[in-house]
Length: 281
Image (cartoon, rainbow, N blue to C red):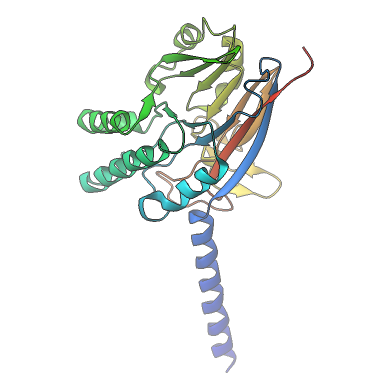
């Protein structure tokens, strides 16, 4: 009898643990931040940016219906994607499906708000043919690919710059050239790697969107992320908003997974940043 109770308890525990793990890896948490800056005046006050990162070809519901519903609910003015929208893992069919998912997501997201995208490291691990299909597909779907490019927008009396740093050419020189002529407006940068926030600030970025770290993949109470590529154990830059003077880097925990397929205590994250006017110069 005692053995039966133990077996039943073990089975129930396994079911609960499996359900929790599924929820942790397939739910979506939404994090809201406000970025206050003296370059934000009345025309940009309240401007809302949704940040998507590290999707890795994952779909939340059919055709990413759930993820798109969360984005639509925020009523953003702009959507930025900070890389790793697809993944090089798996066989040719798996990679192709991931690319299709990424393109479909951009197509539907661009119906909500303008989409700006800078690639991460995993896109460049795809074959050249796969890269071409992905990037052409994103562009045809309405996404704007920023490959060491800067765009300027006149928002009433204010200037807004949005730049994308290519992960394959993410040198200090490329960064400075990219942001060289953006100081007369609010400079937004999309750059995949989060650990270079100080460099982004020194080069002239006011607000940077990054991902890559997956929140540390496994998050421990009181310690945060366990490991991130390029940062090692107990990394500093895995989530949240980090300030470097008046400049800020916003780091998404990401939505998908790559080589380590499971998130632990680390639910997929959608980030929303609202620009706020500063009344102090």
